Amino acid sequence: MVVPRRPGVEYGVEHQVRADGTDRLLILHNDHAENFELAEAPVRDPAAWTPVIARAARTPGCSASTRSPSTWFVYQRRDGLTGLRIMRPDGAEHEVAFAEPVYTVAPGSNPDYESGLFRLGYASLVTPDSVYDCDMATASSPC
Image (cartoon, rainbow, N blue to C red; front, side):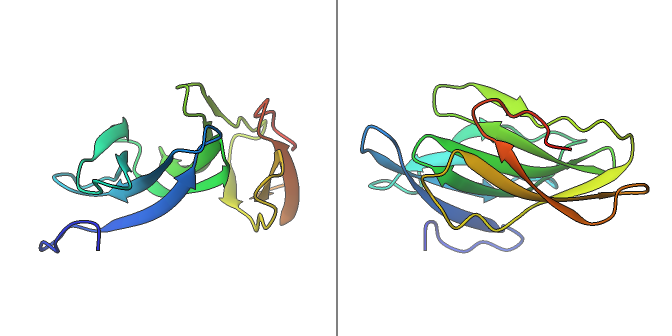
């Protein structure tokens, strides 16, 4: 348990070891909001949440996950569309852009923690269910 249970508060925790060897927790939570916020906390003080992505009325966070010692992604929904945002501890972040106006994207299985690629599932009205690898360094859309 990261913080004591409270009615209506949900949170999910992901552990990340940074490239410099320090570790922290990424916490996706709905504390004091309808939509979710992504926060981080030191492992030694898991209740000391610091916002990474603040709550936004039109952007509920869906999930967050680490993919390498220096990169993580947020799977989100904005204006009815799902999306992926790649983030780095230095504050750099990139949303993966897609050319089609209506689509569904979701994180895929990424078993190689050290890989520079992020696997995602993608489908649209004209593109059947497909699996792509996205380069996390550039966040360029593979589809």
